[in-house]
Length: 337
Image (cartoon, rainbow, N blue to C red):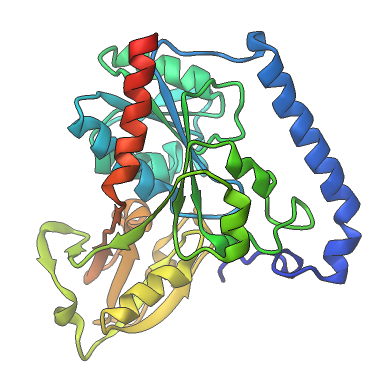
């Protein structure tokens, strides 16, 4: 069963109104915390290299991992040597660690292991992001830019660029926790450097963004890769006339299922909670029926997935103007440093 957000997060219901005072308190505390870090440089740790934060303002998945992968590729193409730091949610690292090649997702977290595999760049994990970044730079001193996967609200890490990924469907009723899903108010989006829109925006959200640059994103993929033999690949036509068990333990599983359906597949959906610790029993479907996983879930299931299990990788497609905007800011920072 997939974890779903509380019903009162999706509408301004009586329960949400009752929780309104707690949301007001949460917002006041969050604003005070942000102000303390911004007004006292001693609280903030600045690294010797620029930092780009890829985050969101709501609880739940908005599509940050593909954006981090896209950003790393764009930075590398422009001559930068990026490294990635992540909280490592779902892992069990004590302190900080640099993810080794073929790292265990149960130890380091599914997203960091996937990012290390996708990007080929060093990835460090830890709740203390400045410490994780220091460990990464110590082990990989050639890195000259850090990408922080999530961490928009981790203000102790100084950042040069803030990039926020927004899927409006995750914003619910637009209220702060616990009456709604927001970690910070929508007005926070006016302060960031750019917004990546994962899906259409309403007129109200566009107005809330003010002058913040917005670039659309879509996730594209057309190839299925056999989980036990990466050289074995196929297109959607190979599954025509067959039932396909689609398995997704991500923030919004329906997005994955809908993408497969749009390719003509006969999908049997199996949603799981985000960062779900999969076991062999979760994939024990009828023999001979294909199983298709997201890349994020594939890294956790490769050791025990049955035959005829496939990964469906996707990549973020974002207009060139977004990368140009980021690179211009980095270049300006380098010239004025």
